[in-house]
Length: 314
Image (cartoon, rainbow, N blue to C red; front, side, top):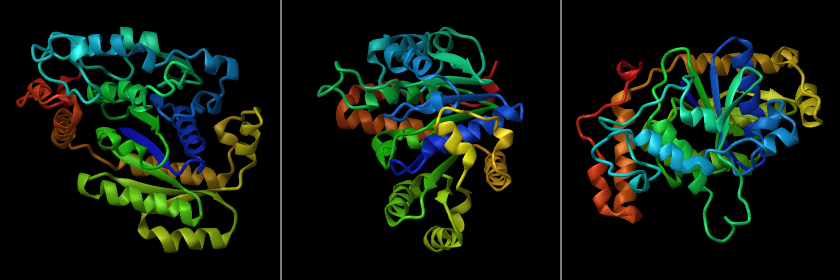
């Protein structure tokens, strides 16, 4: 399953995604996590030191390798330079499994607390005024477009804040999107915007409350988001300790908060991917990008007879 965490800036996306990743890993589930937020904090939230996080290899810095590897011998893509972030796979493309060994994972991912973790990378001085952050997130989108995950495998992405995910088709790459929502008008506003944008694309959007302190907070969220609210995370000494650099085992999280993580896990496992729609949406957004800015000739990269799916897993 592919899972995204989205929400207003400061709502606690990274906190929730790290808790969920740690919960899955503790349960013995194979987890590949990607930090695609412009503020790269997932590694530290999962227990890395600041020095380790700064030294982590990035997907953004390895875009050329990623393109060259995924292109394979697809005859519709003459060279790696012609690929863009939305280029869909086709016959001859090199597909990846989330827990295999390959040059991309060797270069870009490291193991941390039983989790395979990759990061898109932060802005550096050379990026300022010249690039948008999507130039780095595009590496993750390409990877997801070419990834075949099967039952029992979990790919979790900590996304950019707000509606930034809609700058490409990345928001359609997930089986469940958890929107982290504080009990505030502004945070609920981001939920409504996200729900409005996602409505026509079959996005499974689930709200998880965060920073909930009392019954009034719960009532507010229930009134504002209704049935979309799956559960909430309330005041947590476990989380505060982690933010002070004293990470604890996920089993020491408060019982009421562990219960919310269990509900999230159940919601994810209840989903079943429509691979035909998954491929169709990848093609749709690639064609949108081709028409809008990348050049209409890139429509020729689409292989109309190819459908990604578990039958292609090796």
